[in-house]
Image (cartoon, rainbow, N blue to C red; front, top):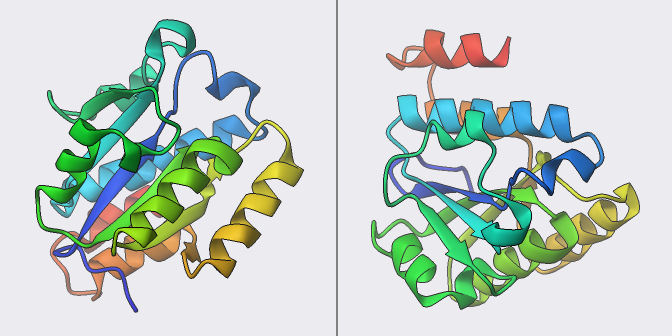
Length: 180
């Protein structure tokens, strides 16, 4: 199954000021999330971002937060975005049944969100290179567990090229510039 820009949305999980700096390889992860967000914007794919306990972990990192419109950021206390009624309503609202998930931490909030969304009938794609944990072993275990649950493990470039679909897409040059 390919990721369809008309059927998908991008969910950025907990990429926050006090959490991101301690995640292994955070700068590369943040850069890939930025590319996914810019590609989603260019291809008109809706985006949502969660913030786990922002009083303690801070808000979404500023370069990413700048790309979000009002109403696209949601505070949460549950580890799974799907267990927060307001956030789940926002995920369900556009009628898109494919969810591309990226963010932090892979073995906690990303994992629990992906599994719960899959249980709720969404097709879930986790961008492995745009997802991280403090300990790389936790990330690897989370990716393996999600794959075993039928969640598609992809890369950010796979997402962008599947959203494009064709080299004659009017957004091709803009998205290609993000990848280079």
